[in-house]
Amino acid sequence: MSQEPESPAPPAELRLRIRVTRGEDIAIGPGKIALLEAIREHGSITLAARQIGMSYRRAWMLLDEVNRSLRRPATTSAQGGQRGGGSVLTAEGETVVRLYREIERQAEQACAAQITALLAMVGDPE
Amino acid sequence: MSQEPESPAPPAELRLRIRVTRGEDIAIGPGKIALLEAIREHGSITLAARQIGMSYRRAWMLLDEVNRSLRRPATTSAQGGQRGGGSVLTAEGETVVRLYREIERQAEQACAAQITALLAMVGDPE
Image (cartoon, rainbow over all chains, first blue to last red; front, top):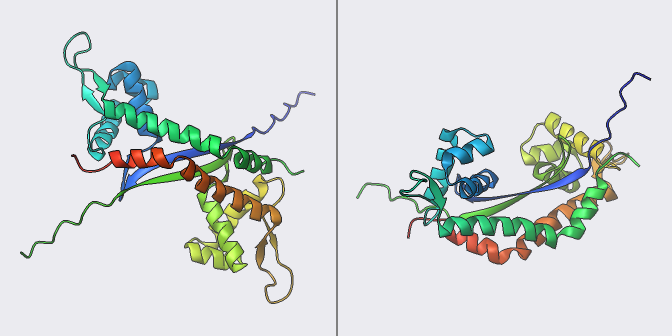
């Protein structure tokens, strides 16, 4: 009676990961999109990095990769005011985030039937 | 004139990767689907592993993970005949491969407009 009950196996989940590559470079991926969203929320690379649990240096490098891989940068420095030194998304940055999240959402909706069927095949033996 | 011309930057590509997870375990992913397809083609884990450029041991382990994560196994041993000792897909294995590839294809079709827009934002500065 003192034995721990076995915890039930967690349910199967489908994860859809989208990357935009150019040759060897990953221009856009899930980590970079999460970083852009955190910058949009906090107006600061420092605070965005802290929220994601990433070093400032790593966040800065990812952002630099995104900005160099796009025709126009996704972020810009906010000048002056209380947020002097902060970072904000450009119109292009907003569009990149929106398109990425739309692709994720729409892909899952479009394939809902197949996703349900596939997930139903994963689990303990019948 | 002896200088090598710079090769033009390759075009941006979108990669969509689908995984089915259960807790910490990856039940189904791109490598496992490629392995199942190679087994379907060759009727043998050895030949499938060779085609993919994977060790037999690694292929066997991936296959074991797939088969244990599904309610019914995706492969079975082919008995007797010239293929004695080979492996073939079960009906469930065929279905897993079909659903996985359908999700990939249908997701890209459903999001074609957003994918085109996103890819157009990646490239050299205007």
